[in-house]
Every structure is written in structure tokens, then in C-alpha cells.
Amino acid sequence: MELRKVAITGVHGYVPDYILTNKELETMVDTSDEWIRTRTGVEERHILKEPGKATSDMGMHAVKGLLEKTNTPASEIDLLICATVTPDTIFPDTANTICHKAGLNKAWGFDINAACSGFLFALSTGSLFIQAGRYNKIVVVGADKMSSIVDYEDRTTCVIFGDGGGAVLLEAANEGFGLEDFVFKGDGSGREFLHMKAGGSLKPPSHETVDNKEHYVFQEGRSVFKAAIKGMTETIKEVMSRNSLSPDDIQWVVPHQANKRIIDGVANMLDFDHSKVMMNINKYGNTTAATLPLCLWDYESQLQKGDGLILTAFGGGFTWGSTYLTWAY
Ligand code: UT7
Image (cartoon, rainbow, N blue to C red; front, side, top):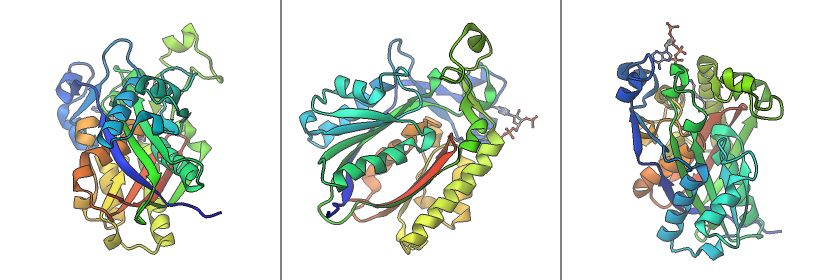
């Protein structure tokens, strides 16, 4: 069977209007604008405050914008995959809700839960359907309403996260540019450092779990910090070595936006010029599955056809990995 090459042919993002600044956080928890900026790089984050609105609404806005800017009729989308850890409901999945809200009446969908690596895993999963010739147009969404699982009395987590969504269109590549390779890893023993304690089948919700605040993000920051630098650096090295790439072959590094110091650490370990490392954590914070498409969206006008990109992520699970692609437009 001849495999087709697959490319990202469009990207769009959405963040809610409300901006939660570091100054406002200073009034909520014992923190300071200075601490947050210097320890994380975050200056502000967008929060979905509107009652009744969820992850699917941010996904829907991103998808509608994507279809409009790429002149793609909704009826041409075969499949939509949504990466998220904050689905609207435990079931049904958020992907199908996005299809419904965005008018993708011919598409089916499913969610991928791989925390901050979710978008990367979804991107490769989606590309395989096109590669094999089964489908022609697939939308991959990364969206998270982190404010729904963050404890705004816990200064160690609430300053980091934000809400947002991004979407890319995948199509068969015409000119040889597109997704080239990926290296993905997982280690379930890392789950103790970053997880939500209750709400699933292990510990179903109860008055006690709510009283104990077990439906919020739990993170042991320092352990995750170290593992993130190591994991992203190693998988970037591996994917570069497999494709005989030197830093000069890479025009852009697109890292998961969890902490500016993690991103700088990875760039330093690999001798990447910081000017080619995408960074927007200052305005969005860590939007989990949305960070990578939001980076591509923000930097889209600077990307040139043929540019070499490495996307890299690390998150709960642990899950992590790096994807090499050449930009197709
Ligand atoms: O996206 C998924 C993957 N997640 C990540 O990659 C996140 C990885 N971890 C991190 O980004 C960092 O570990 C954090 C930003 C979460 C924390 O930064 P840190 O430099 O590792 O801080 P720390 O946990 O070592 O804490 C240092 C000090 C502590 O005080 P003491 O014990 O030294 O007196 C904390 O209590 O900073 C204190 N602290 C704060 N101070 C002011 C923690 N959070 C805050 C805060 N404001 N918001």
C-alpha cells in the first residue's frame, strides 16, 4: 500500500475574552506578579467565565474559524479528533459535541486524553487516516478549560494555567512538505506527580472527595519540571538523529508552554537559538492540549513553506514526545 504524505494546511485558535492578570491573582492567593513572571514567564491568562460554556465551545470557535479561513465546507471534514483533559462531560466525548456545534455533519470524532502531549498524539493519529488513503480532510483540536479543574486557593497551580483551544486542518500533501516523523513516550509511573485524585472510576465523586478538593489538578512541580526538560530534550534529539537533522535544519521549535524556564532549559540543552523557539506563555499561560496549536496560530504569519519545525510536549501520565514536520504553506 502506498502511503500518502500528510500536511497541516491551516491553523486557527480561540481564547476567551476574560483576562486574568497576575495583579488580580495577587488579590486571590499569596503570590506576586514578580514571582509568577520570573518563575514561570506567565503575565496573564484567558479564562472562560461565561456560565454554561465549556471546552467544546472553545473548540467550536477554533474549528469554525479554521474552516472559514481555509475555505473548507464543513461537509468535507471526515473526522475530528479532540485532545483534552477537561472534556465537557466524562462521556460523551467532546469531539462529537464540537462536530455538532460547528456543523460538521458528516464527521465522526473521538477524544484523546494525553494531557499536555494530547495535541501531538492526536496530530499523528489523525494523519495516519489520511496517510492510509482512508480520509482526505481531518480536523485536530487541542482545547482545555483548565479553570474548571484548578483550585484558585492553591498558589502552586492556579498561577500557571489558562483556557483556550486551537485547531489544525490535515490534508494529503501536494508538494512533499508535511508530517515527517515522531517519537512518543509514556511512563505510567509518573502519574503520581501530576493528576486529579478523584472523579474517575478509581475514586468516584463523593461529598468527601469534594471537601478534600480532590477534583483539582495536583502537581508536584519540581519533579515534573525536571522530567519535562529531560523528556523533551531526549525526544527532540532522537527525532533529529533519526532524520539526520542538525539545528540549522530546524527553523522553529514549538514547545509545550508549561514554564518559560523549562522552554529555555530545553533550548539551551540543544543549542537552539532562542529566537527560533516559539513562546506565548506570557499571554496564555499553560493551556494544556491547546498550547501547541495556539503557538502555530500566533506564529503562522512568520512560517514559510519548507520550514523545518519540531513540536515537543511533556505532560501528565507521564506522556511526552516530539514531532518533526516541514511546513506546507
Ligand atoms: O504542563 C504539564 C507539565 N507541567 C509542568 O511542566 C510544570 C512543571 N513545574 C513548574 O513549572 C514549576 O515547578 C512550578 C512553576 C510549578 C513551581 O516553580 P518552582 O520554581 O519549581 O517552585 P517550587 O515548587 O520549588 O517552590 C519554590 C517556593 C516555595 O516556597 P519555599 O518552600 O521555598 O518557601 C513555594 O511555596 O516558591 C513558593 N511558591 C510560590 N510563591 C509565590 C510556589 N508557588 C508560588 C506562587 N507565588 N504562586
